[in-house]
Every structure is written in structure tokens, then in C-alpha cells.
Length: 109
Image 1 (tube, rainbow, N blue to C red):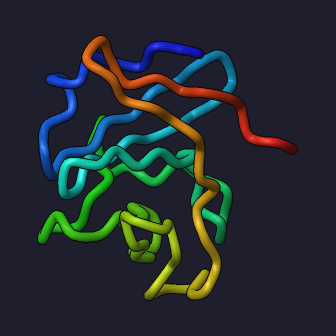
Image 2 (image 1 turned 30 degrees about the vertical axis):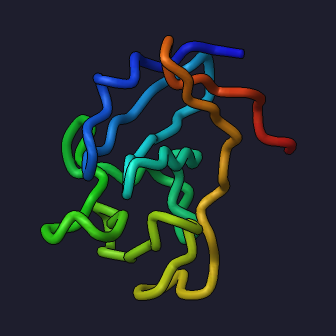
């Protein structure tokens, strides 16, 4: 397990990016639950964020690709608008406890 951050470092409705070795990932907290994905757009394989830790659209309800505006559901990573519609972000397994938010494993390649 890899500690990503303390629970209070990811507020409700917020996102954060992390680089762990060669793994670029993002966390989003929605309705109290933490969602983790590889920080890579399925359309072009590029990072998603606009600025550091800025992964969400203006409404804060969808993950948005800064390159071409594709929109992804926070809960599933499914692209619902844009050139990669129907594709999904690569989910990562994480766990939250009182000590922190933990990355449980690396994605299979």
C-alpha cells in the first residue's frame, strides 16, 4: 500500500493529482467516496488536468480532459461526451481509513 494523502487533504467535491514512480493518477471525492483513476485520457493518452489538481469541469460534477474537453463520470470513469465517448478511465484500487487514502495496487498492463 502507498499512502497518497491524509483524508482531510481531499475535500468533498475536490480532485488531486499524484505521481508515484511512473504512475500518474488522480483522486476525486464525491458524496464522501474517493475515486481513483490513472491520469491518462483514453483518446490521446495525455494527462487530463487543466492546472495542478484541476481535473473537474466548471460544475464540479464531471472529470474533464483539458486537451479536447471529453467528460467522464466521476463514479465510473466512463466518457459521456467527446471523441472517446464510451471509453473509460483506468480505475485504480484505493482505500480510505482514518490515517489516509491508500493506493492498494498498480494497474495491470
